[in-house]
Length: 390
Image (cartoon, rainbow, N blue to C red; front, side):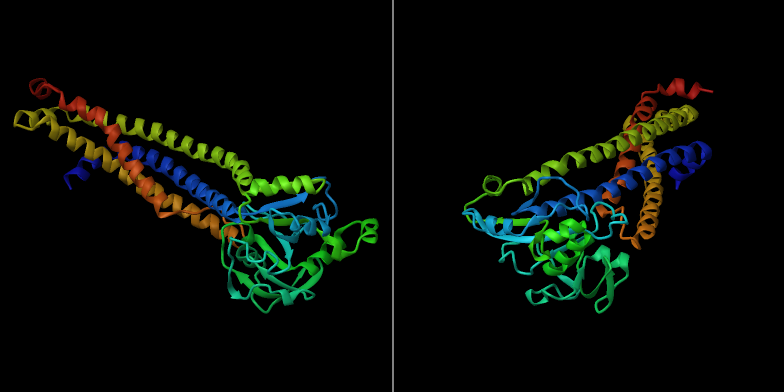
């Protein structure tokens, strides 16, 4: 209680110091929560692309839906390579060409034949409602929604929904994966081929049958073949294609993540400078005001270590209070931000226990470290001179 009475003696100064720390920790919590979300998406993407090679057309020509089509014969060619254990032809389309995507990943339609990976897919998905697609679904209009896209569309198993002016029955909702499947509508390959054909210009539609269309191939390396070796084989065997391995995905996305994490470090440094200077100023003024009191304590036998300990603890309490307020304010922003974007599938933040503990510990340690200098100065005061201080 004596400690809080000391803080209450300088209400305005203490309040302003706590406010400065609160703002810094609030910014740290909000930005860190956003970084957590991005890092979770990146980690999920790394797992999603691991153990496979994604093959797309290299022409970079935006046709109709914005995706360059390929002939399904490409998948047969890739599947026949010595280094390929399986090659799954797929259609990937923009879910809503006139709308925007969610945070981190784009909303897409993914058409494939269930089981075409022949058991080589390592990224497992499961249905929290209903079921997954089966090979028997080919020829029907059914869809399995990712968790974020299902929330945005407000659909449940058994509902019907129009996707690109075609009616589909919802047969499943996926469990959250924190990566691409969350914003994906999974449909049978034949249905996706028809959707893609309908999006192409009339001359292209007349020149090709829908069942010949694909937009990408997912190739799985055979035992003893690395992803990079399979990618090289594909590029040698098939003209005008791009390949993407899991390692290349990590390299491409890692640079962007590093930039955002650097921003978080910058916020922490700013919090350190602003909060630290505020605490040093507050504690220095406190020492000046309590010089006689400190002199009395030293005169009656108070050790330098005890003086330092009392003032450092006092500074730490200021940091702790500012950290708790900053955490509460940051958590409020995170909750409100996520709730505001939940209906559209845009979840911006992920506040983890680790982030919360770090924020409070950071502010407390910051206060204690900043209080060391004034505390050391106070402990070195000569008792006689301190007693004469007016």
